[in-house]
Length: 564
Image (cartoon, rainbow, N blue to C red):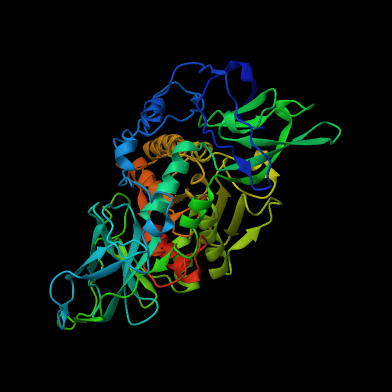
């Protein structure tokens, strides 16, 4: 199985870990039995990442901790200062809860917002509109604490014009809203309650108390073709009560993976992987707090439409003149839509509306995309927009890849492959699951090499330390790649909006994006803020955005590849 080392992990060697006393149950009522009364022996020296790992603190209670991975080389992997203080990085106001009464939670129907200051007949282009939001419960009473997840937008006269507003939580039930006025003409405010503070409390509890909310299936095959299936996961404590556990280690990244010991087959006969079950981790009351009737709902309009005057002949705030290049600071907001086009506020982005314009940019380039299915959409968009890019049938599971398209005349090679475990997918060969760090380590880099990384959606079902451990290995690999060939372009796609459940909420995605930004801080990489690009318009959220969004995301990528 390539560079994956295999050994068996025996429960006799596990330490006692405090587990949630709630029984975790799979969606098909398959119980996941907790290990208790055992000892964990941590083998070898602890890498620098373990400092971060054990600094994750939740004041309410302790949580079980899986073993620390040991990378193949002994050198320390530097973590950015932001990663070293996870508690500060992921700060969110605490909520006392609703005492079991749904009516005491924040309501989208009774919460209100209004202009800060007197109403003006006209506003100047380039200034700001400010407002105050008061969160209220279902009885209409003002809340006395913060922690709600609101999304504010300023929208334009056409469907595809908009910019995200800034929401500042004063932690007393009041929020300050700020909207940059970036186009002339009519504009109006829309505010949505994504999750009440009480619903966020549910998400925090699950993140804190559960080392996973899903599991996976491993397929083992013997020499005669006989197969056995078992449960697999990132933590040996959550794969059932089997007598022993198979432990797999990626020798490039140090990443660990665990599967229950098959009944008759050895650990090294693992050949396949797929998604398993979603676990039931909520109470009935928590389900009500996360229900669709109180989630992602618009507040009653509290501010009438406004009019923004032109500035001379200027009807739009222009993008900066500096070309798009890695390492540039990204402002907030990072851009806005105007008549279907995303205008970057960080650099002079370009549109690539024709096949020839895309080909002119990509000629002679080798693009390596590694991540989840939202990044695969970029690969699909380019293959659909450029007729000369011909996909090559590699006879693989499409969901996982690797996928490849080529234009031999212009020397274009376009790759995409999914990141490795944990990955919710159809059954796929284990040999196809390559870690991002492993792939980066095999690239020579250079001025014709572009690396695009997009991770996040498959990590919201695990606590932040799991994602942090993955990002530490990827950061080290990116640092090494840029050191051996600084002319390599590395682009980080942030995670986009979409899911609204305990398994993949927008609140969880916000935390993932905080970690992504911190992980690559200080490196000469470029960012595509897919979060803002999917939360600026009055369009329904989807984990897989529509063509309008994807086209603008790819245009920004191409602006970094071809800045002039």
